[in-house]
Image (cartoon, rainbow over all chains, first blue to last red; front, side):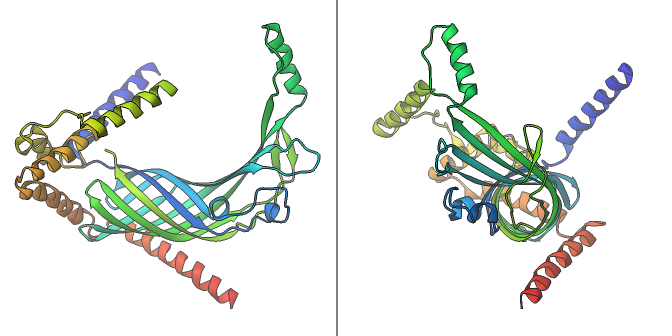
Length: 235
Length: 116
């Protein structure tokens, strides 16, 4: 078994070294922003959450990495995340800091061709592994007391502490996108993408500390998506 | 962390106020060895440090009134090679692209039809 591993490492080493000597670089990074329009009923129907605005509803931050594995094809990982955070305004509560993220993690296969030396058209099909996370940073509770007991052992005064916990839900989906890329340099490009996302999200079966709970209703089943990206050919 | 921030701010302030060069000035940029490296490896074949060096050399050389043609040739040769390599779709990739196009068309067309 040890010999097999050594052989594999040797073979992989030779293959990779040859690749870097002969072939052109095929690894690229992307950074960008996306726009979409979900209906997050679970938050919009309740005024305790931060007010819905463009940045916390429609805007997505994006990063990704791609590897060209075939003549006109790339494979990679791309993640779009929508963020929301602010103070919850619940009566009687400790006004905790609320955080919510909706992450669409994609594992795209992208085929492309160049219509001009500097212009590329690409076609992407990808499964989505979505995850939503809701966190609360609460103040003053029993775990805070435990911390203060520990801190007192070392001669510290009592502090007002916060505790953070998060509930999560995963779902599957798929997406198709068409992209238009313009190369500013041979290693640097700007890209516009247009497409759709289809998510099989359910508000049931959220997880919080091992418990199954019901989460907020999101209407994210069918969504058009637009994205703008900067692409850098890394290696 | 605060010390690092202060140092960076100080360096930037001194740089802008007194014209201190953070990066050493490139001597004779038009015959810098990085140009030969770019010709050999291509721009995408260089690592990030080499790319930064190349961009600085290109700018400095053009400021000195050097030949734009050298840099233009390096770049256009690479564009042309990439273009030739990916001008036509190979093997299954055209079928895949067609499927994506159809999926997107049906998604938007059916969506529009169901809305109206």
